[in-house]
Each structure stands twice: as structure tokens, then as C-alpha cells.
Image (cartoon, rainbow, N blue to C red; front, top):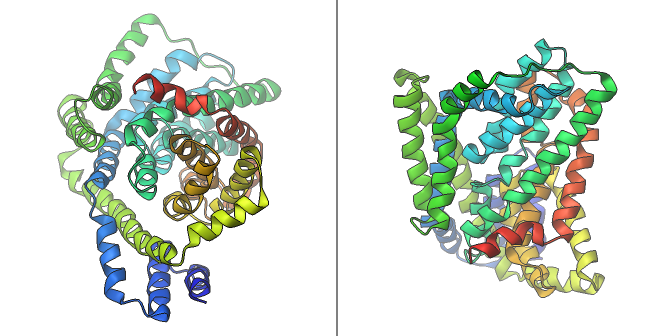
Length: 426
């Protein structure tokens, strides 16, 4: 009965419109009260969930991405991408995707990527003759790359949900090739659509201007090498790398590029603090919810259920992918990582699935949920930036699910795509 109270109250609160974080906390409190567990224990779990040194990487990465995004880096990365693919038919769509990959290595956020790159690219694409919906579709779909391309703060959340034993550095490296595959698959689709609908070509950028653009964007791109080089070389931990990236982003934005006004800096910090506050509240309440699930032996019950249904790793991963795709349409990525990881990870490890590999599967799978209604936070941002309706955007987005699902299948059943890079640095 306590399990029914836990899950049922969460569903009721969520359908009543209570934010997911508070729904998790209230459900944990309701289940504890029903079963006679002291509420102080639940409160301590909420506190313990947010009291983790490794979590400092999240606010630092979010702040670094915000500084670089609002300080002119997005526009510089768009210009850099034009050098490589801007002259091809449908080139601006390819520029959009490539710029998202560049910016993703700075922000690690799908929503931030859509807002930053979309503000620059969507008006340019419309002005050059691309349909508005197509421009918004490309922007939203391309923003899945930052979820995997290091550094991804979702990898930090997964590591936390997994109990902290999955190395964050390995997760960062594991996401690089899958993130690259997403970009290639989306570019292939855009080239086919551009040829079919005769979209315009861009202009070939001369070598003098190309060198100037590359130099202008160099300082921002150096952030990537500082973060990954420092982690791989053992110079600093992922948390320390996030702090270094934050300081470096501030110096480059305010003293080198100087596109951002000092008078607006407090507004940027305020937005970051609100975002981080939401994430930390979610993590704390999710810890309490996970504590109650552990007491009620939900992971063991789920393991017994799945082990009784399937006999092969292929079937198990297919079933889990279907479930994650379904629930990802109703819940955002962070709460799903925090709730689903303790349930599914013990099951897949019994079938020999590497925890790092499974983390990439989950992040990519739930990333697709950011592009699906009714929640679809990336879609919502795309609608706001591109000035289109959610209904129209959702219908036109269907074709973009095809390459994303193909990449998801490849990542799921070809573990080397995720594990090869981490294996080189073990």
C-alpha cells in the first residue's frame, strides 16, 4: 500500500500541475507519513541529496555556458561554421547544426543552445528563403548534440543518480561520438530536404575572412580543450574543470570580446541562480523520493519484473528504450534521470551492460523527449524564439525523429560508439 501511496500521490500531484520537483518531495513525505517513517529522515535525505561536492560542477558549467552564450560566442560560432558548410545548398541549415555542436561544447544544455543559436540562426534562415518551421525544426533538433558533447551537466546528474561510482570524465568522453553521429544524421536529412525543395546556397567565404573569423572564435573554442584536456590529463577534476571554465569564460567575454555590458552582468547571474536553484531543489527532492523507493524495494521489484519478461539483452534494452521514450514525453530529463537510473541500472548491469554506455543511452533517449509534446521544454523555447505554434512545430518535427531514432538504435546496440574513447584513457 505504501508503494501505491508513493507513486499514486506523485502522479496526482503532477497532473494537478504541481512542479515535478515538489511532486516528488510531497509524494515522499506522504509515503513516509503513511508508513510511519519519521519525517526527519526524509528531510535529511533532501539535505543530503544536495550536499555533494560533485554537484558544484552543475552551477559552474551552467554559468560558464551562459556567459559565453550571451557574450557573443554564439554568433562567432555561427560565423565559424559558415566557413565549413555555408556554401552548400541548404548550407545555413548545416551551419545551424554545426554551430549547435560548437556551442554545445560550451553550454551542455539543449535549452540554452536553442535559445542562443536560434536567436542568431532562425532570422538568418528565414531572411534567406528557408521556411520558418524548417528553421525552427533544425534549431531544436540540433540542440540535442549539447546533451552528449562534453561537458554535459546531465552526465553529472546521471553519475549522481547512479550512486556516484560512474566516472564523470568517462561519461564526458563517451558522449562525444554519439553527439557527432547526431550532427551527421541531421545534416544528411537537411541535405536531402534542401535538394528536394531547392533551398538556396550560401556564399563561399574567402580565405582572408575565414582566417579572421577563426582567430575571432579561437578563444571561445579553447574552453573545450581546457575542460577536456584538464580532466583527461589529470590536472583537475570535473568539478574543478567547471570552475576553471567559468573563470576563463568570464575573462574572455568581459576583457577579450567585450560584447557584454558590465551593467547587465548581475541580470545574467540572477538567471543562472534561478536555473541552478530549480535543479538543486529537484535533486534534493529526488533523493528523498529515491530513498523511499529503496525502502520499498522498488529497484528489486522492478528487476524481478523485467527479468521475468525478457531473456536477452537486446530485448531488455528495446523495452527500456520504449519506456524511456514514452515517459520522456511527460517529464523533463533531469527528474527522469534521477528517478529511472536507480531502477534500470541494476537491471541492465545484470545483463552485462556497461554503466557508462547505459548513461549515454538514457541521456540520448530522454533528449528526444525534449522535442516531444506535451512537455518538450526545447520545443517550447523553439516556439518562443521562432514565433511558431507548438501544434505546427510538433507536426513538422516528425521527420526529424527518424535520424534521431536511428542514432539511438546504433548507440544502444553498438557499445563501442560510447566506450571506445573512454577506453583509450583508462
